[in-house]
Length: 138
Image (cartoon, rainbow, N blue to C red; front, side):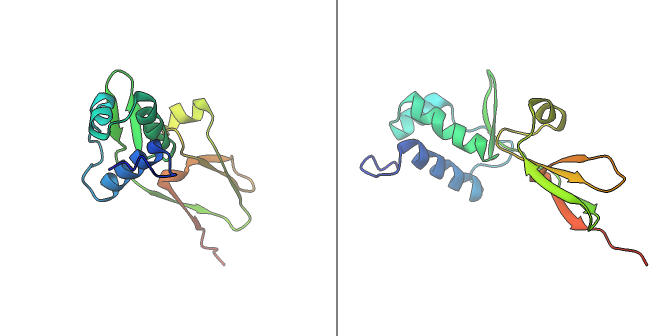
């Protein structure tokens, strides 16, 4: 429940509740969250607080919102292991709008940029990429 006497903002409390439901499996990948109206009624909150809570969860990559449909628990995506050379330079940043569209990256998810000598730079979604050192051959 929401503690209206708490120092923690109510939208953060609602985000905590929904996050816990996702972590516990009560809300499953691909499942729709209750509507904004339903969340407002259930937790006795205003629309702004509910939208702020959903924004927090979107920025964490836990949910996706589809216009005119609703908000869903983000489906699980396959993890890819990518080998990088020891001389590689790896940085992390937020993706451009074009990269978000190209790689289907939800709001709040960064990308890795891998620069390897003699190779084209790679942009990889950080939520579904594990970087591993390439095995050196002798």
